[in-house]
Image (cartoon, rainbow, N blue to C red; front, side):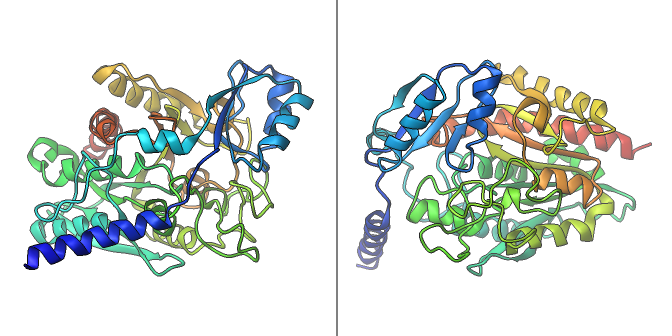
Length: 415
């Protein structure tokens, strides 16, 4: 009877969550023609009005996510700019309904899976479970609280062998809530370092690791319960119809200089002030507290297959750009060796697009972390919705890149 009651309760919760889910009926993905410089710049200048899934780039087309209400004005805008396009997806709801479902949560056993997407409760439970099982390796920490009171929960992985002057690596993911493929990469890294410690002993013994699998827990949870393609935080800045801030435009590095917006409804809204978001404040404070020990900052995003380094706000390269690119290329080569996935490596503004107020730039300028990278993982499905079957191939190949990054610093710490 208890099992039946529990099953009924789970079904009721799933039904309630489904009832709250936003429908994407009539939402379209528009794919533009390849863009020359003039049209690319003109389209990029409208970024605060458009939701780019793939941004304007020279010689390539942009992908734009459009609601039924916005469609007439967006089509008129593209016509005015003389930009041709085709409809890549005519009805996003039909695509989601026909896509491979996320398998139901497990009722027992380990709290994490790499064959399904895990919600924030499952992810946090996994971190707590590891700390209980591996107390000599794992410590659960917090970088503060989100707006809605969720922990910015992370773990420190260290063999506590008494060695001093160890370097450290900091990893985070899901600052943009809809990028579901990013947390599994962080979680797989944790799993390999802890549950497969013997195979990665050299990396754990030489370095301390800090991993924050979901830096935007409110937005991330909201994608499970309400809006699958929600991107921002969940703060209210005066317009209940346009909630949230793009936390990756909210850091205190050249805030609101370029590639971000003052429009509350924009997907790149930078917030009312620099570091206005508790999630941003929490990460900044935590990195400052350990910054002098951190050799590498990795933030996982999707999608696009890029390994990006500072700067995002200017085409002027960082003074050490050659070193940053060299290490990024080594990691990209290791990823490609697994199944042929190719990454483009370079400065953010140079190879992708302008951003300011990003965590990647702030980690270098504000926390003093020389090697700072954004990893844009492969696309899946229509872009942000890779099926659950895509998780394991992505996380396993990406970990090979993480290993290359880590070995560089592990070997350096031995000299």
